Image 1: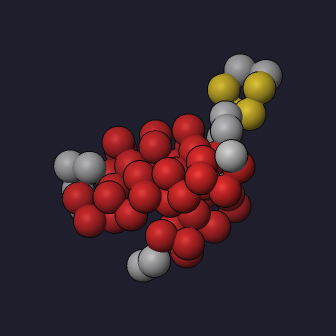
Image 2: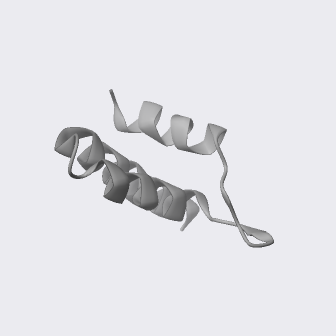
Image 3: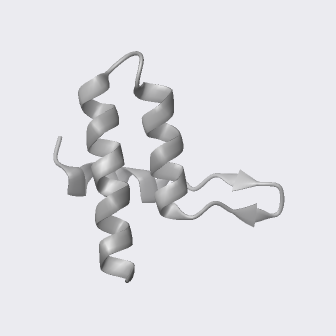
Length: 58
């Protein structure tokens, strides 16, 4: 799975924390943390997608 595909998947399922939605990079990093023990490669792709998002936004 490419970083871009992972990034798009992260955007499709927004999470709410309280009343404020998490930012897409935060969502991606949370998912990476959750996947780290089960699928390290996918966790790495999620982290890369979060970094890519931040580069585009800047």
